[in-house]
Length: 321
Ligand code: PSU
Ligand code: MN
Image (cartoon, rainbow, N blue to C red; front, side, top):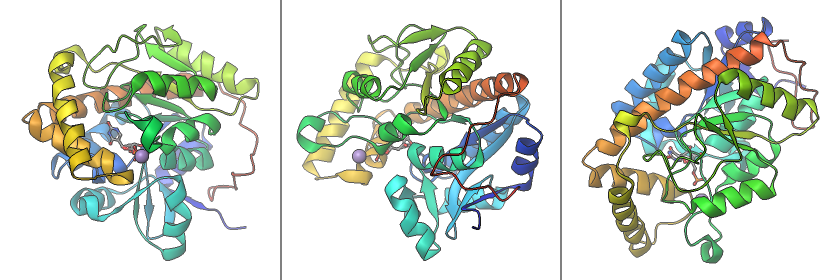
């Protein structure tokens, strides 16, 4: 059987040698930020991972191939084409592969690619979650189901309070996904460092997180783990002011009947306009901050020479072997 995934040569050799690798997503590039800040951020995030001693693997679907590790030209392509590139979550991958199309992968789809490639650490900005109003709309991000059954650690700044953070944490609890707070007891709310909601466990070092990951997967649990890392203090936005802006953005989305996969990108763009670009600055800084922590965790995992995860039905043999 031919491999479903293509690794960049640098990523393949790092994995073969047991070096630290960090997966990165591409929806944030194509749908989460405007050009050219999206390209600058994608490059800076990769640079941050390298400076912290790990190899970056930005994931995407390129001409129908699942890819881990993109060239600078490919990053530019995703950044420039922006929203004209399909936003790809779990349900979209088969279609894009069958048609030979490009797709910008969400947290869910990036976790799938990372797992196929044997990458266990992934950095992003914020995860999707249970939307406000979900009891009526059923709008719950596929990211949460992916966390329920794909063994990858996702380093994020929590989730935006365009979501119902309390219900998001309940959902993760139901599906057995540990939520760790990095040097915090509270689940961070993306732009804000606090949400009033507790994480399951506070962790004060990348090594402690790596030990927990080893233990979690070592006893055969197959779920992902959320590592919540608050936005750096100088870039945090006022929680109360943000609440008003988020409420306005959500109300506009309702009036314009924006639903499904279009909702999150709409809200992100509107929030950026309403904060006069401050939200974008915070977003860029928190992603870099997450990339650094993810690289440190990946290094701690590599240092411990983890036993390889056994094959699962979703896992084929990557091309590098
Ligand atoms: N939240 C953010 N920024 C983002 C996203 C979420 O703060 O860019 C993106 C991620 O790619 C995430 C996706 O996986 O949106 C979730 O989309 P949906 O809610 O449609 O599942
Ligand atoms: Mn949704």
